[in-house]
Structure formats: C-alpha cells, structure tokens
Image 1 (tube, rainbow, N blue to C red):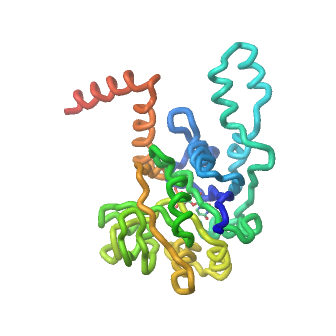
Image 2: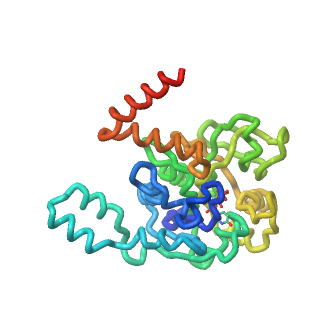
Length: 294
Ligand code: UTP
C-alpha cells in the first residue's frame, strides 16, 4: 500500500529580486492577486490535495508571511459585532489548525534544491509535495490534487509539466521524454535551464512536485548546478540513475508565472475577471482602454 502524501514543502526563501523595490519589505508570496496573497492560493491547493502538514522554508525578512497565518481574534470579534458575516467567513477560511504549519530557515539562498533539503528532518521517510507559490495555477480540479490522484497509480516521483515555446525552454527545467502517454510522460532525464537550442523537448517543469524521500538523500550530496545553485531538478534526475521512477504530469489548467511582473499582471486580470463583483467594471475598462490604444 502506497503511503499517502500528507506533507508539503513551500520554499519561500528566495530573494524575489524581480519585484524590487517591493520585496525590500514585502515577501513576494504575500503580494495579492486581487485580495488573496499568492501563498493563500498555494495553501488552498495543498488542502484540496489532502495535505495536512505545511512546511515553509523561509528566510530573513519573511515575518509578514508568518503573521499572515496567525488567527486574528480582535478582527474576528469586530466583524462579528458589526454583523459582517461574509467577511468573517473569508477571514476564518484562512485560519490554519495549531501545529499544522512549521517554519524552517534557509540561512543562505543557495537554490531551490537546498531550500527543500532544509526541511529534511520534518519529511523523514515519507513522500512529500513541493509547491512553489509563485506558480499560480487556475484549474477546475486543483493541480496538486490531479497529481496526487495520478501518483496513486504510478508511485515514484512526479513533476508538473507543460509545453512552452522552444525559445523559452532555457528558462526552465526540461524533460527528456522517453514515452509520451498524454497525461503521464515517462522520461530519460531532466535538464535545468539548458543552453539555448539544446533543450531535449519543449516540455518544461513548473512548480509542483511529488517526491520520494530518496530525493532528499540525493540533495544531501548535491553540488551546485545551473546558475551556481543547488538544483532540485538535478536531485530528481539522479533518481533515474538508480532504481527510481520519474514521471512528468501534464496537468489541466492555466499556469501563471507570478514570479515575473508580466505573469503577475496577467494573473491579476484573469482572477479579477473570474469574480462576479469585479468582472463588469473591469472588462468595460479593458475594452475602453484597448479601443483607445488601437
Ligand atoms: P526564483 O527562481 O523565482 O527566485 O525561485 P526568487 O529569489 O524567488 O525570485 P527572483 O528570481 O530573485 O525574482 C523559485 C522558488 O524557489 C524559492 C523561491 O522562494 C521561489 O519560491 N527559493 C529559491 C528558495 O526558497 N531558496 C533559494 O535559495 C532559491
């Protein structure tokens, strides 16, 4: 019987330089799409997938992130007193059970692989998910839930994959495809940020993973790779040299790269247009703006 995936690591210790100066004092993961911080979307997706333990790998200056997950009794009392029930519910929906969240510090931004490795003692000998909150995925069934269901069939390691234009492949981890079965793709290898023109396919890895504890062991001895960072991709690819399996999973949904300004703006518009309270005003404004510009 396969062990259930109940733990997720959220690596949020990066410097967020693409959003300077905002990220001088605001963690990138707290920035909001309309009125919900990026990290709330990640937590909601993890909960839908059955995750019970939420492990954040943080760094200096991320205090606002820890505060975000505190309960707010004064605010709740005030909303109750004023009869603002809908807002109260919105607030309470973000409350986490005591002890469900753990924070680990990554003392130096040595790369995503290193950030994941920092959580090794909390993972121990269990499969685990990794969610990068700056990849926000709009999907009917949340992406990690899709992956957990597929993993129940395949076991092994699984990475979320999506097609990208060939010329963009060098910004991603890229799959060397062995057999493409549609949703599930078996692979010969993975390359992090391949030089232009050398990508083995246009199937790129994005920020959702289900991994075996053996990947943690690989991270233990991993040397720095692309960009001088300790790469998670390399530790996963190392599984293929032993007895491990690695699958790409083509998820159904639309991924927004909210670690980039353009992606963040697109996600803001998409999530606002999906809301009944904002759709009409915003689309009228967008129509008018496009008309004036053309
Ligand atoms: P990014 O490559 O987006 O880096 O990291 P970044 O520092 O967040 O942002 P920029 O590029 O400077 O603007 C991808 C994910 O890996 C985490 C980040 O927090 C983000 O969730 N990460 C990266 C770490 O936790 N530690 C690291 O050392 C590097």
